[in-house]
Image (cartoon, rainbow over all chains, first blue to last red; front, side):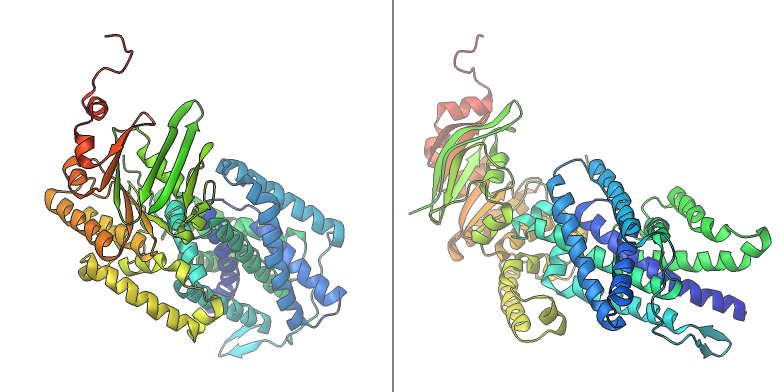
Length: 294
Length: 259
């Protein structure tokens, strides 16, 4: 039983990071209908920016954390202005292909600057885990979970109450009508990319803090697909629930099935689930079912 | 006093000429209707005026400003609001939220004040709420204010869309077939609302509508389009007796057409 709870806890921690990345993914999809295949690479970029700031420039972790957040948002903005903006009005599929190209370019840049070996952040939390009854959790995991939950609350409030957040919902719902209300949709597109890059960057820093970083971090972007498909591509709560579910399933299958078959189930489980979901609920648990009225 | 001037507007999509050198002007506080058979270019014209389409030639002047080729959001901010032929509401949101979104331009506060709800944020929001409540009263939608828009019957959704356009507080309102698909009673209500908005709130109205009895009843002036060309404009009486308009509707022979 303890083993089970332990697996659930580590699944939730991992899942909350998936949820963060999924949130960025959903934001871009909602506002612009673009599937961003570079979401994982944005995460990687964020992790390396934080690495450069803390290890190479010796900035204290907390300041580095906030500077990295700003730089990630800036990166999102630059990508939007240089690459996405000129493509407004082009077929969505072209833009999606561009994001694949973007992921390759980002990865190459990171390899060029920092190489391919795994790097670690300076330890900011003691490695002594916190024990609650029979369960023990590392401090950096708790920090990740706390940071993710804080961000979800901030985003919830942002979308519900801020005029920018409401404008983003309006653009996601109906672009023409939003424009006619005086909402500048190009600005909203730019903000979506900034926020998506920002949350991905934070996800990268949280993972880097627990596991160290290398270029394969971009693979996290792929793990997020089952999460968003499960939750529904255009649903923010869906992204969170989907992310956490995938994290927990991965952890459980890793804990129980991997020892039986000699490993690897953990990597496959989320995608097996993805297939099943697509068969039964193609729009995800919370996604908008599109019914075209003729 | 002239409120909006359109000079020689020309719009084509590839080889299809949707609008051919259309010129007209709309006076302050009048109800100006645009009529014409399907595909005459009525909606395209509205889309040009509010910036969703950009004409290849011609000029649109509003408030002494040339707004041709401005983006739609800037035109909305300058004071032109609209409703759409096919409902374009934010379906997942409540009636109140849809109307509050109309107030978007008037809410200037940023993210932080809106989260902590202080100072300007609450003051601006309260002013907006007061205006929105007035619109809700005017359009008689009190009973559904908290309902999700997507769940409402069609006639009410049309009313909410009108309310949302009104919440922007524009000087000119472009109404694209506000009565399409409605029954007799709903149409009468809608006509009454349009007159109220025009008379009590001093809005200039540009209306596209197929229901001729309503158009003739409430319009100050009417312009008729056919195949992207202006065929007539004038008072309802003048339009009713215009032979070109009758031909366009009933399908008379075109000039030079071989029988």
